[in-house]
Image (tube, rainbow, N blue to C red):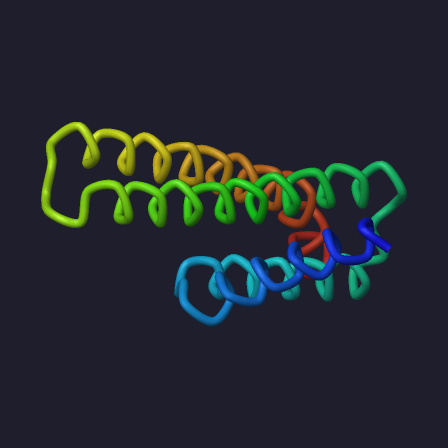
Length: 117
């Protein structure tokens, strides 16, 4: 029963971040579009695994970034240079994962798109 409650808390957290954080929604929509592209282009099992790792990495880091920002805002509602550095580093982690995911998408899909023409 406790495991079910933990699962509910996790879903509540994801739902909250989805409703409140624009970047999370953007990454979620991008993930859905990539999944649709994977279906359209019939990517193979290895490509699916790589895409899944890329998507879950970006989404997970976006959730962690939001959690870090919420904690920082709770601890220090006013501007503080060290809090800014924490938030910037957290956002940087998401950016690096998103760039990596984008490159993965290019490697997997660009050749498939080029073959269409």
